[in-house]
Image (cartoon, rainbow, N blue to C red):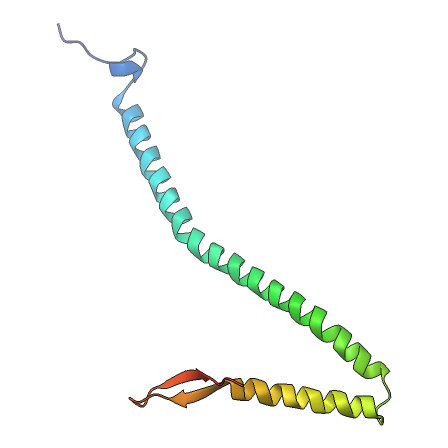
Length: 118
C-alpha cells in the first residue's frame, strides 16, 4: 500500500500539497525581491532628505542674517556718514575675505588654498 498525500490530508509538517510548498517558495522570492528594491531606494531617499535639510538650514541662516541687514539698509537715509561707513566697511570685509582664502600655486603647479595671516 502506497501512502499518498492528498490536498485535504495533512502532509509533512502540516503542509497539504506540493503546491503549498511552491507558494511558500514564491512568496519568499517575492519578499526578497521587495527587500532588494526597498534597499536600492533607501540610499537615494536618504541623500535627498540630507540635501533638503542642508538647504533648509542654509536658507534659514541666510534669511536671518540678510533680512535684518537689508531692512536696516533700506530704512537708513542714503547720503550720510553712517551709510558711507557701512558701505566702506562691507567692501573692506569682502576684500579681506578674498585675500584670506585665495588660490595659491604649489611647488608642483597644482592649486591649493592658502590662508593669509594678518
